[in-house]
Image 1 (cartoon, one colour):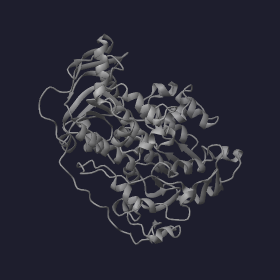
Image 2 (cartoon, helix red, strand yellow; image 1 turned 90 degrees about the horizontal axis):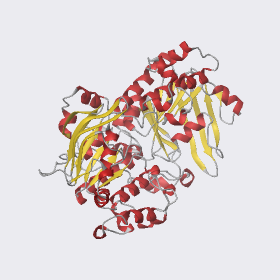
Image 3 (cartoon, rainbow, N blue to C red; image 1 turned 180 degrees about the vertical axis):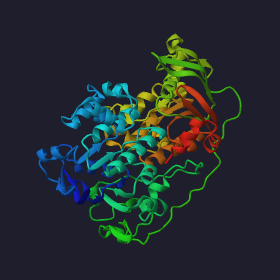
Image 4 (cartoon, rainbow, N blue to C red; image 1 turned 90 degrees about the vertical axis):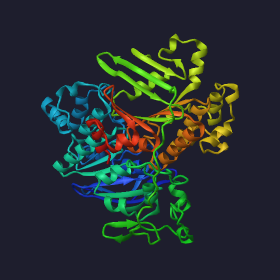
Length: 570
């Protein structure tokens, strides 16, 4: 279905440098690697949708048709029919002013009877024909992704390129989408190129996996074999950074440094600068992909074939603090949006210095609870006490108490790029936050950057000059500037690569230990909650269905919903 040879993406410099890939009919091939490795650019090059100023070189054949350098007229006839693209964010694919049915009708190109649209929706698990008349904002995240998939498949393509299609989804929805994709693929004999930074998803869903780094493929082979015995140090490093869902790890270790520019390492081993096994031979020439066994390729010059991953020691799970008045106490919290009950009487507490995990699928009420504690919305009923203050209704509080509460609780959001002002330098952002702290708690910008593991020189940079992980560290530093007693972390590592995620999680664990900061940690990733939380609360449709120590909840779940969450982890 797909064969690329020497694929390059070139603009002012080389961004993707010589990628060879094949995808057969009915086969799923995974493409994994950190941000900046060139995965998404490769996907866009395949379908002829590169950003302006970039061009594809080399060979890209889909079903025997050469697409590299093809005219836009030819590409329009191929897109949707021979090859189709499913993107990470369905909002980026779906026009907010068009209904779900209109998106599918557009791809059907003239075959638009209502029954055909309903059939296409049913193919992706949407049995309610009324969904065809709804707009994207009226659908849940999982439902939007199903509609986007239906639109991508409506032209009956031979090959589907799925670029991070499950990254922003909770575990159960992710499991459903991947199972759905597999069923559709098997029914059609369609080839799938699945691009993801989630190694668990890649190894669970793909027949073969290609590992990409600095614009080139450095390892390739059957997913199960790569997971059990990686042959390239980069693959081993990615696997070593994975948090475990089964036990708490002594240390979460990401790969030091960052992904270099493809053109800066064109003539050497691209990973040499970050590799603890590098020798002089690694920088003498660019190592080619070489066979090390049946269907196994590696670009490492050392004999590492069959080497197993290093086992990381486990430790006792984080301990809950001793008794006493909790730092945060939520009692019977209720919130409705029209006919929808977002919170139906939720009660929980967080002790000083304790980290409590809050898990549940999209729509369970996690973010509504967080926004209530932060004072961004007022609940319909119940009570919230924080640091001895009743903070249920911020508007009714004394101004001095409101200022104190602002210093008591801060938040770290999922996407740091939307929470940092792009026009302000890192130093200006942190200085603005420091000015809100109590005089005795104020610290310098350099000290804050050091706290989150960034050089003081970063104070002069703007967010666009930082990587995703560095931006998240700045967001954490800003939240800590007022020395809050409670930090609400709302999916703080959901959009990060596994290596960067390990660095940020270890940073947050250290903050909890060293500063005694309590945390309400919201996540849909059970492996993440295992590493950071002493206790875990499971939320379903605005109601707590299970809570207890994290080890008890994950190892012996008592509620059927919790069992389904645990079973959905790849």
